[in-house]
Length: 116
Image 1 (cartoon, one colour):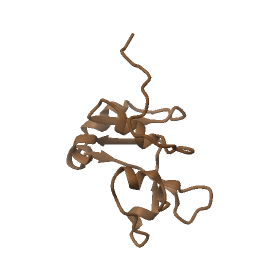
Image 2: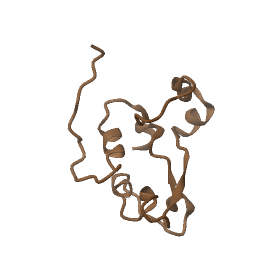
Image 3: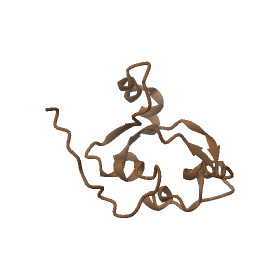
């Protein structure tokens, strides 16, 4: 009734575990995407995030996760072979903390036009 529909990912590939988040965001028809996993319960209206100074300035909001590249079994988005580096056309840099500390993948806000 609200116009939602299931779509095939527009980025071909095989995505293990939680690696479908980025291809799903890239396949979205929206310019600004707020990704919230189903196990997250917002305590405030998440629409307010779109109006924050940080989002207006940077076009993205990410939250740190507890894991990093050296955590076996966790920290996948900080691993050099993670699909995100390929999708964003970035080269993983193990000496830069921006590449080795994982971002929380269960919630993020990004303006796709500004960043992709």
